[in-house]
Image (cartoon, rainbow, N blue to C red):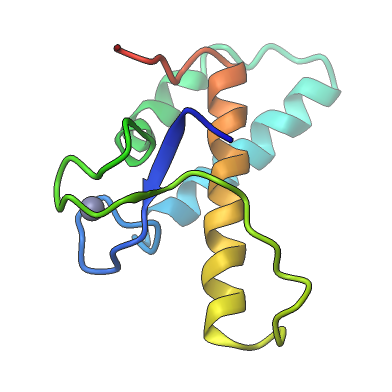
Length: 111
Ligand SMILES: [Zn+2]
């Protein structure tokens, strides 16, 4: 289980469904590519900072109070085009992104 979580409320400002998060995955992809080529990517890391508020420590969202999604949930038993499948896939991908940010030293538990 992650010690951070993601807000599941689609109407929240810190929602997993926020469009800006597509940019996070693009940045992570390009950094992963640089890492593989052993290129220096540390100058790019500050661009990931705007995404860190989406990964929250604690159990509830600081904006809307909804419980945070903290555990990767299986999608194998779901229909691949179903809403729930898409929702869980997005949330799971974000948890992975969070671990990545943490590995790069960008997610720090303030507590
Ligand atoms: Zn929220």
